[in-house]
Amino acid sequence: MVDARGYSCPTPVVMVQKAVKDKNPSKLEVAVDNQCSVENVTRFAQNAGYKVSVSDFEGDFKLTLTK
Image 1 (cartoon, rainbow, N blue to C red):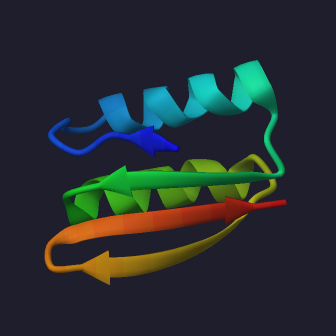
Image 2: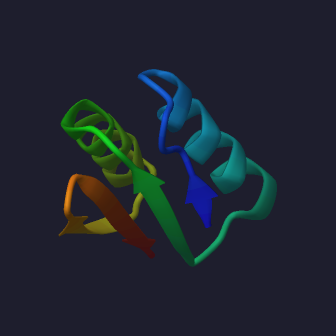
Image 3: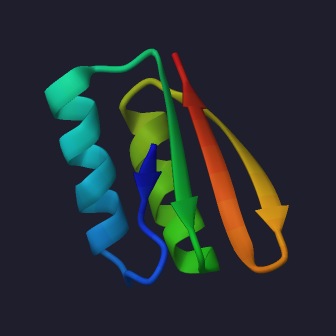
């Protein structure tokens, strides 16, 4: 789980890039709190070969990245 709430872009993307590079997970959950981060993390994840699903929880977003 990458908790990137409270960070503005590009920090959430950098955090996800590091998690993907270090662990190469088949599934990764990411928490963010703004739409810009949702869009940028989604774009990075799709370019890295992940499918992305997004859930909205009262202003916080949970992205689930799966290969």
